[in-house]
Length: 548
Ligand SMILES: [Zn+2]
Image (tube, rainbow, N blue to C red):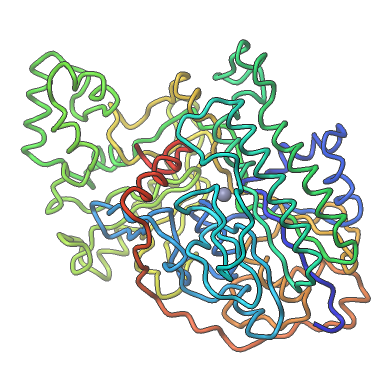
């Protein structure tokens, strides 16, 4: 586009200034340090739920999940008692991405491995699909005749050893950076590239950041070093190459959410709802529990601990009962239940009302009764304290329509919450309302998401601003459009971050508004074979995104 500099968006999944700031100061990340010293940085507030597909589609569309419909790796509808396991893909997304919008306006775009771009679709330029996809070592491209060769030395497998995993990811970072630098010479108006490695390493290796972490293991630390710092150093080297490839461009480095240590406290929200009379167990189910108790498992009254069940099921031959327990839905008497917990994604969670006419066996009347119940639950959530610490549990609680809007609003839980980072909400059974994360569990997963991602900008039109006030990830799309001299559709939920730009750019570029983009809810297609879906699931399970 005449007069506007090319724009480059780099994504580091889950990156957090809590880690990056000290490492920048210590000289561990020289290229990020150089970028920050030239431009500006700020926290980028994620959305509810702060999970990669929902957050990235919000970034790409500038719209909240009520408009684009993506809430999780599985298709999600809060009204389904038994959440069906249907992996989502790019065909599930409503709303128009900036890739499409820029193309419609005549600009050329290049999208390299952004989440939820499989299957690829035609754009005015090049698209290389990102996660989830059937084989993460393969180039799935539009146009289809483009082939970049293997993106990884081998397809990733569950439970890879650390050296193998590091080598695989380091190869991928280099390969993707090679592709990025090469494409940056092709003259695209907008190029975006996504690196997943930061978030993967947070989940797997957070316990190695601090010898005082409960999961820290000195022997393994001697062997592994500090995996998260190692992977960020590889990302920083990649950033240096990308920044050098087009010195005339405007660069934006973002993450979709932050990262933090796994919370050590567990709130079994359905047990809480049960104890407060909102959720009832089936009588037959109580019978099953009673029989187990009779066999000497006293700790399971009145609620059964799933973890204990896992340990005893072999001995008692109760695999079938245990399988039923996994799907809580089967255990509840819906004809007597008024509310249930849904969409736990640390540090957020939801509560759904069992509404007549909406849920299959809803009993709460729409209107005044529904609103009274929501008010009551919101008050109780606000007052909820962790008995171990006395600390409030819920930092924010909202009626869904206060945060979301759009054709998918009905799929979002009636109440959404942001919780204390130390508390992980569970929707399965616990022995009580509260439990603890076991240290042994941290050996598999020790990191989680938090609400604050990163935003950094540097380039020809970007002013040196130091650390600025926090923004929302919904502001990314409008800001990119503005940087490219484009008007912002009226129904994008974010705003242009004008404080990023130099005064002369602001003076010559008025923020302008375009007509609303049409948003139509749509059914997604099934694109994965059973084997492909199983492979994707097992990788997501490895990172704690899906239950095993
Ligand atoms: Zn993410």
